Image 1: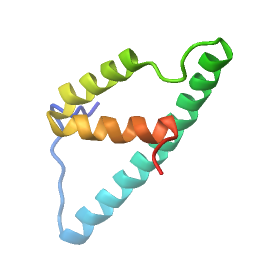
Image 2: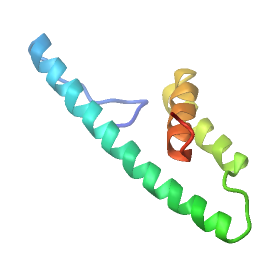
Image 3: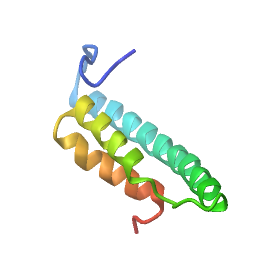
Length: 91
């Protein structure tokens, strides 16, 4: 398994091949974010139906901390963008 802290070496024989790999990863990220948003919105609906707040800030802080551990300081911005998108408040 590839982790953010110890990625496996990747052979990139050319700029074009590297760009094709990046395009594939970007499609995977987009697909995973859309899937995460579906799950997040289902959880939000369950919380609201139970009379709880739609957003749980403690949980979001845990998610942000996990991204920071995995990606360093830039991980905070990535987490905030993902959370905003999945919350449904990213235009």
